[in-house]
View 1 (cartoon, rainbow, N blue to C red):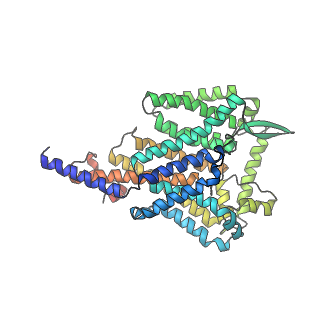
View 2 (tube, rainbow, N blue to C red):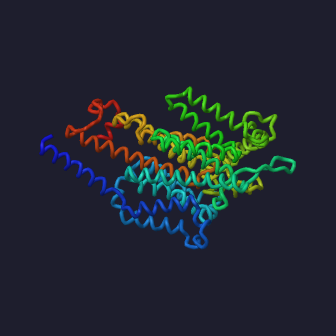
View 3 (cartoon, one colour):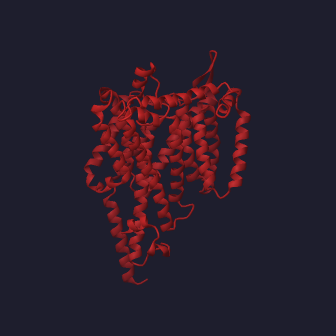
Length: 462
């Protein structure tokens, strides 16, 4: 390569690096956000005496917001993302419909705050996770937090007989169920949700790597599955089947996975107590199991929530007012067991459609990513490709689990949406970098990129 060509290549690389750096938030903002994530999931205020008096969540959110505000010029054009637009439209609808809902006072007094806190995860993740290295660090911290929340109560159960919760069997009898650790106030179903959230990331991001990562995976997975068994969460078990389907679908060793899956089921069933067996079998045999009645009750409850939502079908009762609506209509204050029913109760049909639109754009992002993988020639085991597969599995797991889980004012869909935005942007930057190299004849992209058959990729390149 001639000296002039080398200088030109170095100049282009420097120019591209400057463009990326100018749109990257400073390191202080990223570090504070990582601490914010650790504090939120590991509940430092419940572990450190006096720490909660500092209002760490509020303080962390305020610091991050200020740091982002002073760097706001770096976010020009960011909010044109369809996922961002869809959530901003949903937020605008909630504000504009406030005078029309049944209990606007309850929304303002008690329910707007947790929704805003949950929504911050979308904005913070989408705006701060803006380099490949930060994406990997964020994923590492997030997955570590979830694994810690699983291992801690499991360790306490094995060493001290800790359970954390129980379920009523009828006739005055109760059965123990594993819940979150004393510092982590989550019930068995929520712990099951944490477990099935961690499993796809561990499978796709650890297993394909070197032997050390495989060894860590093989140590963690049995512990996570055993903890899931102890939660007796039937919803989490069904969500695990969704994840297993996607792992099986994407695998090149389907027969091996089928054999492993059967062996795992046999081993799990062999160590279950009679109560645990009855509870899981109630999913398929409601007539001959003691847990069948609770399954029927849950199904009738889901139908009842939709019927309750249809009593005010247009704009709903108001954000966060599911318990209040149930109290006035049914005389009970139970929380929603169905995100979609919760949406209908609180936001009406319009809000339900807007939220589903938000989910649709998230899934469209993963389809778009697959197109860019083909354009970039990224292999089956590249980090981006494996991450996209993990996110697709988590997306459908969340969509199914939401039938049995609330979530309008919970963090998980919003953090996931922010991750989809950040990941998609990084992939677009990678594509743009190769497009610049292509113009100078230095691109390593496949030949078909020059005349792409993918309109989306052509649009990005232009």
